[in-house]
Length: 144
Image (cartoon, rainbow, N blue to C red; front, side):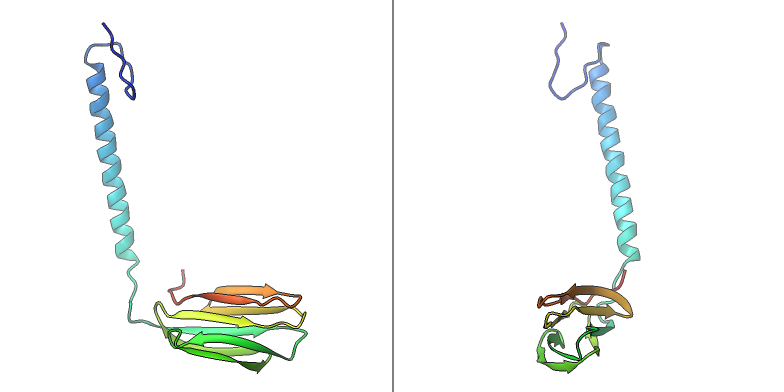
């Protein structure tokens, strides 16, 4: 008599079903060990210094405009600036890991681009035109 169980391979030899399950268990355990090993080696090599200070640069450029109204946050999101600035605009801050970064500009129908750099590496960039607002947002994190 042959009994076929759902989810198991049917192998006609006596005891073959048991050996098939044992082999699956070995494969599952080995795969789990490889996965755990890979995850633990990656996490130790990518430790982040939570006390590090990052240089964050806000930039606004608009080739056809000489000034624009902008909004940005700094100091961990505690300080907000709103006002009209001359273009091109550039402001540099020292920020902590996890600080909120937010920059936006108003366009007058021209093309404008906002850009945020973290430690010299482009983090966010947005270009808008026709009166839309370019906005760059995120949190301070190490460059990849």
